[in-house]
Length: 62
Image (tube, one colour):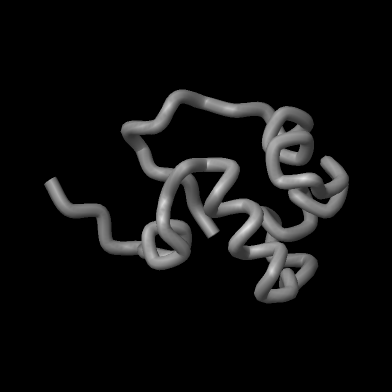
C-alpha cells in the first residue's frame, strides 16, 4: 500500500486513530508483514480520503 505523493504526511499513530486500527497494525501492513482484511483496507482508504484503487496503485502518473 502507498499514500499518494501529493498528500500531506500523516503519522502511523494518526492514521491508526482515523482508521480505528492499532498503529502497530498499520506499520505491519505498510511493511508487508500483514495482509489486511478487506474492511481494514476500506477503513484506511477512508481515513486517507482516497479510493481503495488509489491506495494500491503503484504507477504514479504526472
